[in-house]
Length: 83
Picture 1 (cartoon, rainbow, N blue to C red):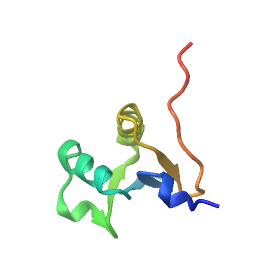
Picture 2: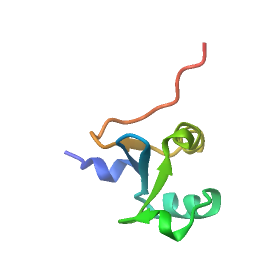
Picture 3: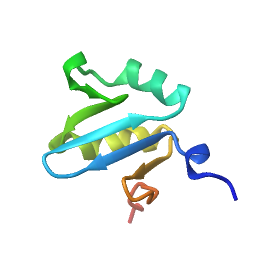
Picture 4: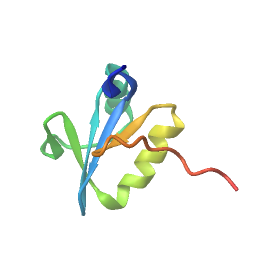
């Protein structure tokens, strides 16, 4: 069985008003450095602490670039289907 970390680029931990977005792959880290503005004090354990009000837009941007994201329960996130 393939380990789930081999299939994902980002992990997001959402627990209220602050979420932690952690890039897993080198490509995800490079994308984050080039596309997400954050201060060094916003980082923890390789992840970036993000206000929940900005999280949905950020996740949509990441997914639209073709990256994969899982939440803290290892559920794969996806864009809503267009109607």
